Image (cartoon, rainbow, N blue to C red; front, side, top):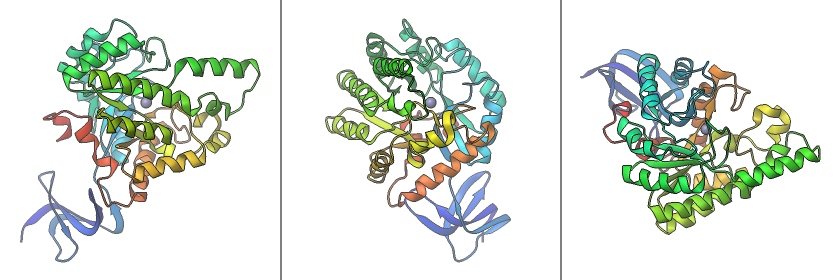
Length: 365
Ligand SMILES: [Zn+2]
């Protein structure tokens, strides 16, 4: 009987089923997955009995350098500890966003020295006049492009004006890559925050009230219409509201190539976390009301949401986990999201390799 380098036993979570079984690993690769029964032989055997054995998780939305003191080393180590074997790092780095080839290449060199899991890199463009970098960044290996309709920071994380979005989409369409957006209506949010401040309405849930659902849906609608006319593959990151998914379904039915992602906090927490955790539960877009969270779950269970990601950023996102532990929490939460959806079909966690990566790119082998 063939002997494997490593045999792992337990409840094995596959793409469309969970089986009590065993995995045989040879030369660092999975050679076989067998149901329980006749036991595989291995130099090393790990028996997890009734515990779940998950495949390595892919997290498409991570920010290693929102705080440059974090960087690749602690993030990728905590990712590995949490079962995330590949992640895609966002381009909104401090001090410089990944908006040209020179900065991109420098990040690749750093990644090759420091990463302990596979990492792919997103690219972005500067607020104006940056679109000429799109094709070179794609050629250099950026896996997709991230842009924003909301201004988090004028230089690092800008709101891209409509004419630049249009140009960017036309160019990204030619590369065959995907254009992804942080989608919130900047003007309405800025105006509402001003009004709230002037009226001294300053309390945790004001963060939700100044970013009502229409600030997400109206931004997404515009982008989908642009995608209709340019033919670009569009991806909406961190969707917080079920109506956004309703609209995405309508545009999909018209042939627009639009996909979306939500993040586990939008599924596992709600607006009440703002009172409980204060600013630590602040994220853009904000946590929603429990009935809206239930609507997101319905869409997830119906297969309308392609991906679940963490949107990890040190000290910024879901600060109730301190920096290094966030990825461990991510993996646990992603796993619990996956398990809550009965695995009768492809789980969102298995999609990113197809959706946001490039054929033949070694990082995903
Ligand atoms: Zn993000």
